[in-house]
Image (cartoon, rainbow, N blue to C red):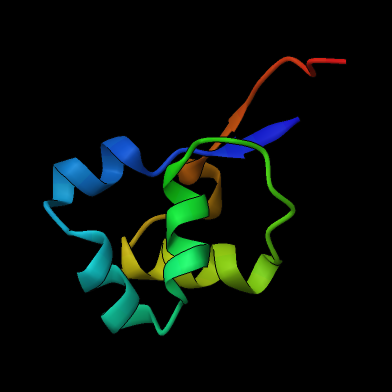
Length: 69
């Protein structure tokens, strides 16, 4: 299973969630979910948008974790 890990990228780049929402057009709910580092079924377009914002690849924001099941 993969989770999105934006916490370190956000702090390295010094962006707030509000700045990310304004620049990407993503909703507050989506941005909050992205920063929780929990599994959520994100659309590929959402991952592409956030990767483009941070000028990185989608692989840079995904982390493989053990499935809890």
